[in-house]
Image (cartoon, rainbow, N blue to C red; front, top):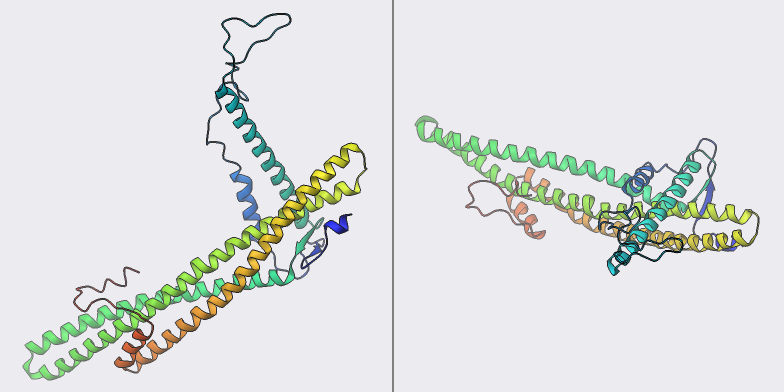
Length: 341
């Protein structure tokens, strides 16, 4: 019967060795953190307050009873509000109870995996894709950090060139014997500053796109991955519980517990398989989106940097027009467009 329930499709159970490692698969360091968050969060019991007559109440509003005695005429019968309060208190108690049982089972499963006494369900292909995504995100974060540093350095360079051009222009007016030399140096710095602003606009657009890809698109997929990993742990915990009950003695009480465990296991199995499918779909779309975005951004970066260092102002402007990048108006006093990013 257990074989029919635990049929292997795209997943399989990998036994944990004595050293706590599952074959050659990388360890999931974030799984313990997710479990700790579940354990410390708990259900929210602060939405409503328990009025008298509920669990732990003072008992006001209840009809006193006694052996052979009639209720006092001054006693007030329980109203509809007390019944609602008792119902709310009962629901909260059930929530806490279910949360406690689930946390206990997941903790037990996690410890048994870590100490080599249990087995875990692993989709090898999906696990490799998830690990590749995490590694790719770390590398893109490094590129993002370097891109921001380049933007800051270019901005500082532009400020220096602008100040130097103003100094040359001022000296050309006050030094008649060197007016021509100071003049064309001032014009050169002015041209470099203009091209630098164009390059800075392209680099800033590149950094902004990488930031969106890393902090939004990849992070959204990794959030789904965390939900999938938590569902996998719950699935294995209830699978182990069902296996232990199946191997135990069969009587009337055990049969009822077995049916309940089987229903709970099936619910967690459906949740696990749904999230596994969601992760696979998101990974596929993420890869397609990443290739599309990076193809455009790398082409932009290459064209802009090449045109800038070649001194090709026309190609720089064409690059910005090609990627629909708009700079600040020429009449702006300060280059605040960078600070707005």
